[in-house]
Length: 580
Image 1 (cartoon, rainbow, N blue to C red):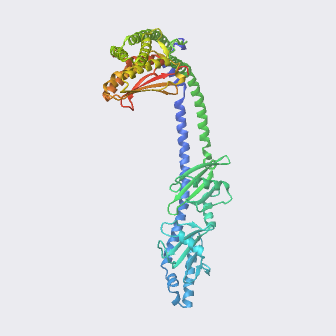
Image 2: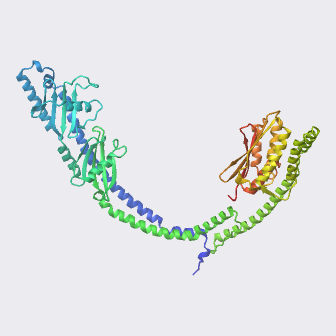
Image 3: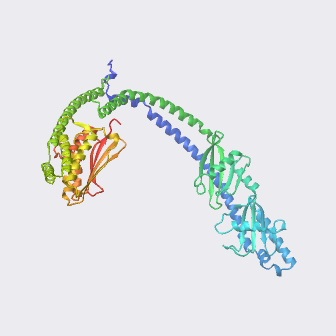
């Protein structure tokens, strides 16, 4: 018998074994079969219940439509027209006969409907109300006003006065009525009869109720049922319940109940049937038990299979990812090992070789970069603008000629400070205060040269950043660049601004001039050169400063260029407080 060492199995083999162990197909098939069966039963029960509701809702619609048709026939009834319009010319016998005929018609109308309790006709000319027991006192002004407000074109067919459900008609039917109607018909619906109809819907299981969708009236099969009251409140609060039919569920006393509801556009009302869920879906319990059993078994199998996958693939892959993250953070001393003889062992070995080689290359590049930056710094220190030197000494000469010894003293002091800083090469990093003072000495010299046409705004360096260590010569070359390429191309009215803005993690130094020769194309070219990390581009003062700052502070440091508010070039030097 051939013995297979599991440590030498490939990842593909492990995956195949894991997939075979995971009985996903069996679970899916079982789940589909049981779910389809349960769904089919639920759909049949729902269709049957909704059909039952629809039958009784249609019956109620037919009854109400029948009442509306009977009311329309009353509009053209001869006896009602005579009593409403010709009462003064009728004899007592004719009046009594007409009233009796109308009473019989009202009785027939009441008996023909399963919902009507009483029908009343208010006739102003008769000064009485005719109903099925002959005559009664007229409606009060409040009753007539209420009927006028709820009867009309576009009004709801069924309304309530707080005690009874009513149907009504006014003759003649006109909008914006200003005169008294000829007669008013009021049909009172029987709440008990409606409740009897609702009890036929529930058939002893659950409760049924009907309500208007504006929540002005409702009739409950059992007024004492708290679960029915909560079901009614739940349906009234649903969005779109006044336009749809369907099913909803809610919990009452930790028991789930189902609500089946059917909307009637003709009645602008909804009939609903509430029943405990176990009463409806009791036969589906066996389906649920099968689903739970298969689900639990599948979960156990999948968990066991997942454990194998984690041990075989996920954990080694996670170790590799964490190792790459360590390298990304700059840790080149990370090494990883694998105890299984599979593809991960080869991958780990190659990773370790890669990190070792990468560490060597980075060390070589870093040393080369440091040497290059030192050479550039020394080159920058040694670059003394001959015109600046000539002009400065010429200024000293002119001041001495006119015996302006005060300015001679000041200028020679600034020049000594300037050249002492330039020629000092012992320190590669200095405190920011010294760098700012050197730049200020340079601007003071230039301001003495161009005092009539130059305005320098040099802000105060914030106290907290005075001892911040920065590379040498990062501010004065930027200021010198502003004179050389911005201001000296203007005839007069030179403006130079050096300001400091404290940020959350560091300090921004902004150098801005009002030069006029900077075009948008030139600005885009300068920005592109700063973004170019290749070593074959020409190293200017701006690029030199940018690279040395990034070498010190990382990617968040450096300089950025834009057009300033003064119209010329705006250079922003980004410095980070690495200790803050």
